[in-house]
Length: 208
Image (cartoon, rainbow, N blue to C red; front, top):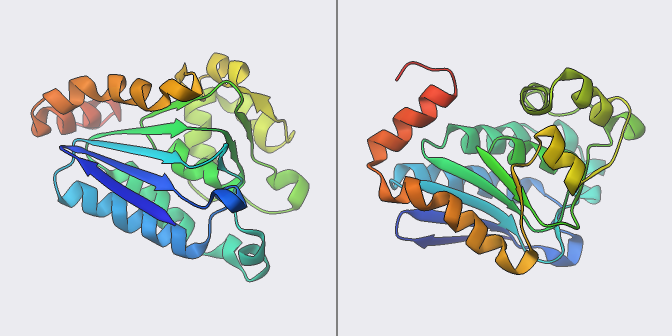
């Protein structure tokens, strides 16, 4: 349910469960963490995360949540592996981003989305807590008040609002989503891997 495609120094991870709106299971989260770690180990300079169908991900698999998926460390393991990727990571959101799936997209360096996408994290309505790292990453992107709009006020925002708030970085036509991601990846793919890693560390506030 996670497709891994490598082309040169670019690795693309695709959520491939479109019949279930790419709802995430524990197995999928474990596969994401492993694939992101292996991409780093294999020297990939760019990691692209996307989905099949019309929705990037509806969040957690409902049957999994009934079995305790909400408390699984697999959520943090997946987002941590993506955040730790030493090159440029891009979430190419082919549709709506919801719930716990927000974590893996927030862990990416850049986010692009199609015009029809919506963004929401309904933990307040459902009585769940967000994954531990998600509120901090969300706040770093949109600021504390807007993070509270999403988490505490349970607001669903559209793509234009997400762009204005800084949650995403560019809007792309669906048919051009892959091309848009690759255009953002061009400079990193052409650069020395050490240079890519160094600039990423600097943008994260770390010493080069």
